[in-house]
Image (cartoon, rainbow, N blue to C red):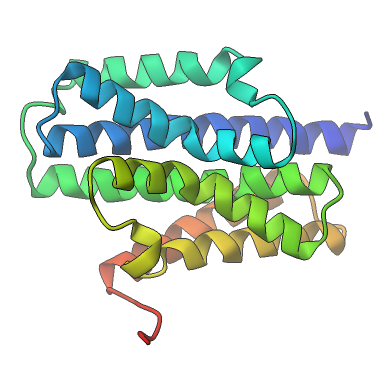
Length: 209
């Protein structure tokens, strides 16, 4: 493997772990909001963090990453331990809602880019990369929302799913034009995060049918 390809792989590994930690927090907070017991909170947090990746890997006919690499599970355990240590479970408030939005947004963007990279590594076309990035980004959140009997974000909330598709497409175009490396990866991550947070803050929505 040449050095640029290795650098991209390492960047995406970091993004994958960042997304895992962020989605662990968002799942944890949803469990707290719903007043689940300890096991319920753990299940919601874990499925939020790994659900999208498992669905993606099944579609790509490969063993899910979490069954081969202990890093995601270690990150989930460490993140939930910190969430408990900082008493995020004590109450649901406006501040906790903001933490949830930021954590969920970080997970969304990180997983959309990491998932899109998996599609590129499998030599998928643009549509395939968009699908894989989208599924990785929103799959865990959809599973989480269905488990707690909420309407999934992607069906009626601002630019949630749209941002995931946009960032996957931008990564595809960047690599098609020969732009790669740490700077490009993290620039796309920051761009996607800003778009998502601005869209949420201003309540941007796609037209309703």
